[in-house]
Length: 113
Image 1 (tube, rainbow, N blue to C red):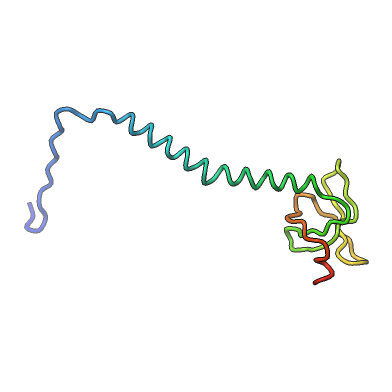
Image 2 (image 1 turned 120 degrees about the vertical axis):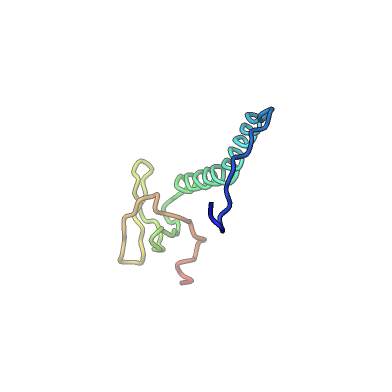
């Protein structure tokens, strides 16, 4: 047609088709499932289990770090309720959800700050 554009022609279909295409798809799905499990689901489940154990082990007097960056000592905590009272210093106390506590710090951390 044109001087610079060549004509495009369709390729002829092979005589036999593609045998075994379904097995390749199943193997690929299984491989993606394993990658998803080992790289995404398993580490997240491990982190959730560790956080759940941390929440169960909280006790009065523990020095903790919250998600908001507050560091304090637990002054009141109840197992049946979802809240804990944290003393930031001698006069200031805040009430936070137990889920907002990210780490239990070693004893004496508050005095070293």
